[in-house]
Amino acid sequence: MKTIIYTCPYVPAEWIAAHGLRPSRIIPDAAGTTSQAGRTEGLCPFVQGFINEVMADKKAGGIVITTVCDQMRRVYDILLRRCDVPLFLMNVPNTWQNVAVQKLYIDELKRLGRFLIDLGGKSPSDDALAKIMLDYDTARTSILTAGGYLPARQYAETIAAFGRDAPGETLNNITVPELQIEGVPLAILGGPLMRQDFDIFDIVAQAGGHIVLDATETGQRGLCAPFDRLGLRDKPLLELASAYFCGIQDASRRPNSGLYKWLKCRLADTAVRGIIFHRYVWCDMWHAELQRLKDWTDLPVLDIDTAGNNQTAKQRTTNRIRAFLETLQ
Image 1 (cartoon, one colour):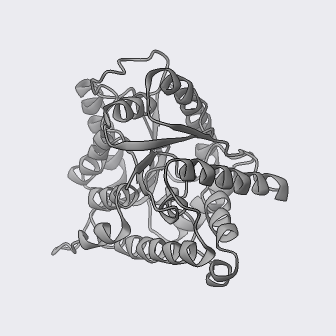
Image 2: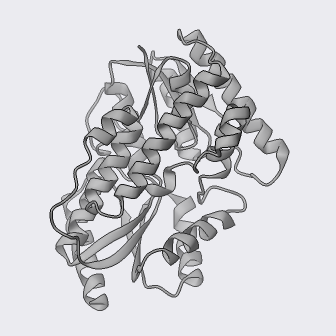
């Protein structure tokens, strides 16, 4: 079975799986990973890390890249020159409030389907797609429930494993901790995290805090909305498109008011006392949201900007988180 790799949350794993191929969402390790790709100037650490992971992956049968992020859009052109693996560029509209752009997203899924068939996949029946969607939806519900009792890092790693592996494999690895988790409740908001960035969950815990809301792109915010059972039965592709395109809120959306509506609901469900705003130095999109977030919320906000794999930067992040938590305790 060929593996199709991607990293954008707007790529539905269910659609790839329904074509008889294996979806695998990549979260790069670190920007500094050495590979035959080398360094590419002007890219954010996550994008550079993604290029390195893709170039080092010898098992990928296809790569899906989206237009959500301008830098990731540039990756398509870079890999087109450097990589022999078949590439697919999926257009994901930033606007979302009218039927025309929602139809465009559905058309892109159909175009992706033809790409998958060219790689050896098969066109799925509605029943086959609905069954796979139900399996993924059940797994997502279990993962979201587990967020109430798992340590923050384990929860983040569980979501990452769900994107990388099959749902059944992910659920089998969830273990309930013996002790109740304590600490000052925090939220983390931002774009995607690399695997090395998961250290931030440990840093927060060691400083006396606990991240109860992972609103990063690779966390809870990157999971699609639950499927409507009636829609899943009658028109599964339309339901899939709606849950992903309309259900995942991001700073890239125009307007992105849905991101703050989503955040308001999640903060109301928790007792969060502060927000860690995580961004990469060269990510203008998320940098632009920092001041808006501070104006929008009464909660204290800690801005953590990182340039990638650097021990000095990690120590700086550790010191700033410790100081932030001292003001909240």
